[in-house]
Amino acid sequence: MSTTTETQTSTKFGTTADIPIPRGETQSTLTFFAAPTDGAKPYNLAGDNVDNPPPGVPQRNYNEFTHDVTIQDIRGREQEFDINVNGFGTISNISSEEKLFDDDERIERVYYPEIEKLLLDNVDGAKRIFLFDHTVRRSNPGAKRAPVNRAHIDQTTKSATARVHHHMGAEADDLLKDRVRLINVWRPLNGPVVASPLAYADSRSVPDEDIVGVEHRYPDRTGETAGVKYTEQAKWHYWSGMTNEERLLLQCYDSKDGARTPHSAFVDPRTRTEWPGRESIEVRALVFG
Image (cartoon, rainbow, N blue to C red; front, side, top):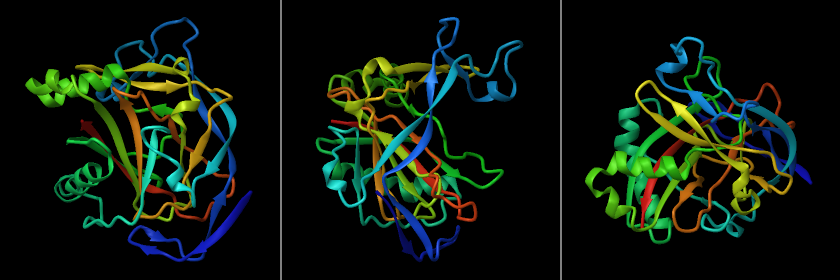
C-alpha cells in the first residue's frame, strides 16, 4: 500500500516544505548486471582511464539488464532489520556538527570522528575503525558524483582483503586473522529524501552465484566491485523520507558471516519533477573485531 506524508523542512540545499513524502511499498525498474557475451572477465575502466582510455579499449565490456521490482518500505519497522542478518541496519536521532559537506578536509576532520564513534557504539564486536574514503552525491546537473542507478556491491572478498593490506600495512596479516567488515554509513544531506531514494536487498535473498566480481582498471592498479544479477527471489527495501538525522549501515563485506548488501538508487514513480533531487554522503569503513 502506498501513502504520502506531508513534511516541512528547510535546508541549505533547498526546501522540502509541503512535499508529500512517498511512503509504503512501491515499484521501480532497477538495472542489473549481465555478463559479457564473449565470456571475458567483466571490467570497467576507472580513474584517469575513463578520460584517456587505452587505444581500442571500451569503457566497459559487460552488459546491463533492467527489470521491474517491488520495493518494501522499512519505515516504522526499522528494528526488524539487523546488519549481521539482513546486511543492512538503521540508526536514528543522530546529530552532526558538519552542516555543509562541501569541503573534503573538513568532512574528514569533523564528520569522520562522528562516524567512527557511531560504528564503535552501534556495531557489535567492533574494536577498531579505519575510514578510508567518502563520496558526496548530488542530483543537480554538473555534480561531480550523482546517485548510481545500478545494482552493485562496493567490495568483493578480493578487494576488501586488498584494502586491508593497502591501508593497514604491516598490521594487515594479523588483522585479517580476526573478523573484518566493510560498512558504508549513508545519510542524506537535504532530507527528507523525496527523489532517488536508495534501495537495498536483504543479503539472504540474493545467492552468491548472482554476485559477480567486476574489475575496476585504473592506470596503476586494478580494484574490484560486484555486479548483481537479477533474481526473482531478491527482497528489496528502502527507508522512506530519510532525514538528515538518520543513518543507514550498508555492509559490503563480512569475513565471518558473509552478509553483503546489493544496493542501488531508484526512480520512484511517485516523485514529481519539481521536487529537489537527493543529496547524500556515504563514508566507507573497515571495521575490525
